[in-house]
Image (cartoon, rainbow, N blue to C red; front, side, top):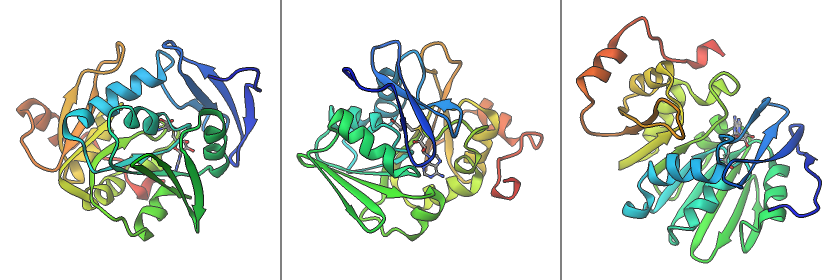
Length: 244
Ligand SMILES: C[S@@+](CC[C@H](N)C(=O)[O-])C[C@H]1O[C@@H](n2cnc3c(N)ncnc32)[C@H](O)[C@@H]1O
């Protein structure tokens, strides 16, 4: 927790304001996206529910986790609490934000920069943060392993549309292992349609703290008839790169 430090700071993309959420954990409000990184009910609790539990990290001990949007590192922090031997790939547009989070929360024992990538380590766990627009960086980076878990944690589709498209979800599917689980807070029908159109098998899951639902996606398996019918409706259109 911040003690006596400024509640605002300037990153590469603009100003951030620190906010303390309902469970006492911090989040940031981004000026550039005009949105906060987490639910105001609890940043750490939401991360545990949607991503760590949603991707079954404790049970499955995935060797490779991929996160969309590093932010202030809550996804990494909550993952290292329950798992210790894995590679955590993340993506971030704002390099200064990562340094700020490291300074505030000591996320890593060591953090170094190699070309356009930040590498952070904590005991056996290693984070590789690809700097720049994720749509570009994931295409050029040579990943050591396929993704076993995906934390789809961009800002909302309205504010951050390029990371919710059918094309983006196709790219992620191509980089994933057979047993991958993707989890996201989004309950939007269009986002489900984007995932579905990209070839993912979907499941609706209870949402965090009163939200109607959240979404999980798999490479294999069967979808409920009800969800299949809903997503087969041509009136629900996927988000597409061509709209951006
Ligand atoms: C909701 S926050 C992520 C919160 C983070 N997972 C955490 O637990 O602290 C979304 C993050 O995605 C980053 N972002 C937005 N668009 C991006 C893009 N095109 N490529 C890479 N990162 C992006 C933002 O800078 C922001 O830090």
